[in-house]
Amino acid sequence: MATRMEVAACCILPGQVARDTEGNVLGKGDIRTQARQVVPESAPRVAAAGGDLPDLLKITTYITRIEDSRRGRDPQQYLSW
Image (cartoon, rainbow, N blue to C red; front, side, top):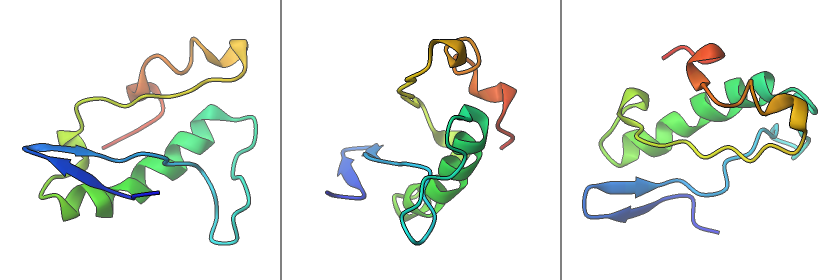
């Protein structure tokens, strides 16, 4: 799978997941911990396209536990740029 695609001024970063270097899921069951892992790891990919994390326009989060749905709506709750 591609780690980065560029289309005009758009950069798409598919498949970002909270895993360590050995492929283990980090923060299993904790959406905040997973987001704190994924977003900083995306920074080099965003930088390679000429941007920075505050330039992100959209973050799509797939939530598998209904109790996380409210927490997952506002990334500013658990991320600091």
